[in-house]
Image 1: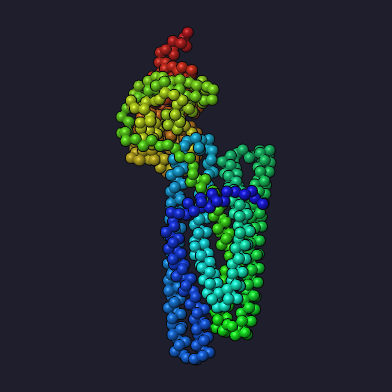
Image 2: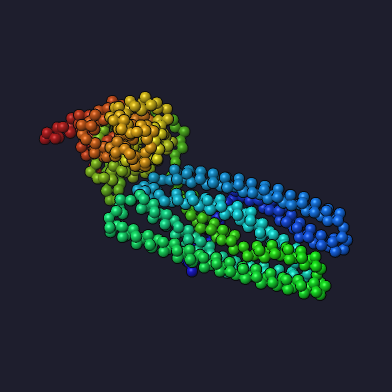
Length: 557
């Protein structure tokens, strides 16, 4: 048996997810109550018809009964249609609400949560929204109708004779016992089955994202072994869940068979003993046949309910992604782009670096680091993904924390090889600069020498890009990101060391163009070109800001 989980907590999560749509459920229940009462029209009409034919043989009475039955069934159809429409609105609403929540929470997650492609598969849990879309209408329409029909039918037949009341009590106790005995393990195994399903999805995502990794024979062997293990886990979980759901189905079918035969025997005896009329027996058989059919299908709806437990566990994990503490200040957008590091200390494990310097407005600076972590740490501090160990950073005379977070991140552009969304080149550029004209775009492309790249692309600016920029080469993708940054007119542009891979002559032209732009530039590099830019920042224990004249003197020495 699967390990026991905190099912009470899971039940709370389930109802928390469904609570905003409670109005739809209440309306569906109201329609269901009306429908349940109207379904009794058929057995009542049959009973009345039999009594009429037996005792009066009146044709007019038969016509009246038929007319009333028709009107009643017409109302039944109307309420059924309205209930179906209500649940259609529910499906649209829960999809819209949960999708919007997941998008917002994913965007507002802290940078560290997804850094290095960690936790990227958590968004797969979105597909559990479809479980709520599919299962809840079935439960609220068919499941509730079945349950109501059973309760009303059992209650009505119980008034026919005390023995029938006892008979129905035995049926209810039997159903309750079956449910109590098997529901807890079925819920546990439903959650285990959901876990194994998402483990499979995660593994498939890993294979697709590291496709080349599995091209060698040993890695291929590992893929085969792990795939077999994952399949085995899912099959075992599925078999474990089926053990309980199938047992439940079989037991309900046994109750169905025993109850059907017992009612016929008991009803026949009562008719023979003249304690029950023939009309009552026929009505009881009609009513209870629907109840017994419900008993035989009861496990189907319980299985849908168990699936919701697994869905609630997974969807809750996605809805409870850690959220970033976003600054929402009323300060206006920056007006200057000078940077001032005030006793700023960056720490990585046992190492640290202190930065205390001012970078002038529209200044151009190389940044030379002794450790790789220094580049990453400084970038995350500038973007406010992290805070320095001590000290602070100012942009335009204001601390970074004084700016609205998203506005600050728009003002500081990081140009690296991070992933983008799949879109066309034009769409990508206009996400950063919505008002950019094609003329301005082509001018930037000319300055960055991207025109030959654009010319060889069959669809030009409409060329679709993958998340890694394909079909562009890595260098072209990097320059495209620089073009987007320049078009957005930020206050600060930070270039990472990937720019060092650009041939020096080509890189010199790009840096010379950047030198003329009204933007502060920090370029992390291991090979500064001293003919351009103002100075070099050397990050070490106590960082230094060295003009290129000073560096030239040191090299001569």
